[in-house]
Length: 75
Image 1 (cartoon, rainbow, N blue to C red):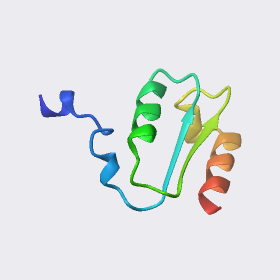
Image 2: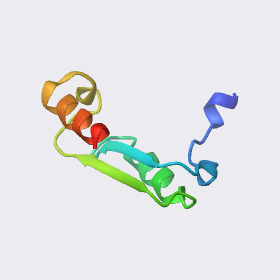
Image 3: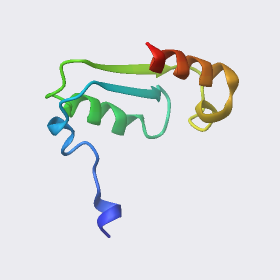
Image 4: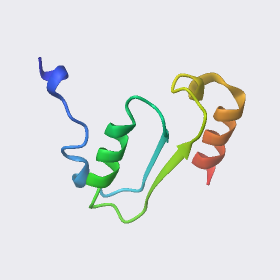
């Protein structure tokens, strides 16, 4: 039951390190990403990197998306 009611965005304001979130704009779960990002108020250096035209699962294995993610992480 705890897992079903868990909301990652509730305590994200406690993070005080840099934050990079990556998401696909049309993902079914994008609302959660937006909520978490907007609640990360204690983070000065934060970024929300958005991918277009990708299905969520494709960002894990399609070379173009993996390359984009890797380059973003290296930055």
